[in-house]
Image 1: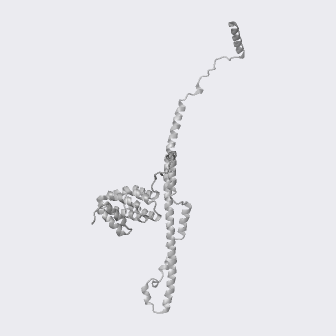
Image 2: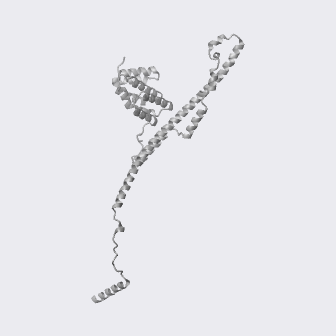
Image 3: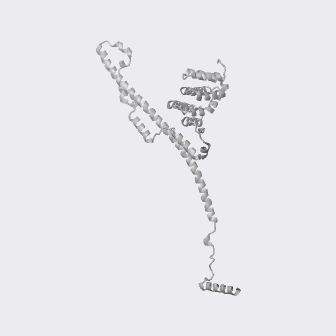
Length: 332
């Protein structure tokens, strides 16, 4: 293949890349031919993807897909090397619009079905596409004292709240209602209309049969049939478009709802782990406290120190006081 590999040549080819299959496949073949530069290719691809315009980012992803899949027979180098950079790429692509994200989600499904990457790595890529980068660098305007005052648990809670805000607020009732409305008006399952369309005469859809019409009456009859067919098909197509839009809406709602539940599940698992650790600590304290209590002396078992002593009557107190007075007088 003509043209040696250089970084500048690769960057130029990336700048000329468009979303046509021919453009993607041509550059893919050139990269596979120069697969010994796989490490440099993956690094430049990642860098240029981040720098590229929004309408070109998906094309970069399709290029990587073509290279990864079509180079497998010649060696695993590209697959392994791109695998090291794809999480960053999907994190960057998390800012894309819903249509682009849906295309990338289908791409990940293909990779999973064809075992391009293992399931754990595919899950990481999907998570990156949905959540973006987990940890954002602190703002330069943030004061050091402010960062010190934030506890780790508060930062984790704040991070979780930011993640959950990425999803549309889809309540279960809204999702159920949308599915029920869809089931009540499925144009693609309307057997009556489909049967009417199937029974339309051939003449309304085949131009070549018009030349066989020999009289005006037959032509006018066919004109009426064509008008009815146009109206019937036009209305049915409008219903199909509405159904398609509704299905897309439901699909987005279900996806967002599932992603939200997955994130809430992960949060619940982390909470369970945290409070299980606290439970273990409290149980340990309780056991130590019980042991300590058992080792303390029982004051109720001590002997009564007042047993056997005569009561000290008031008369004895008077005698002691009188004796003290005599002694004082004598020594004077």
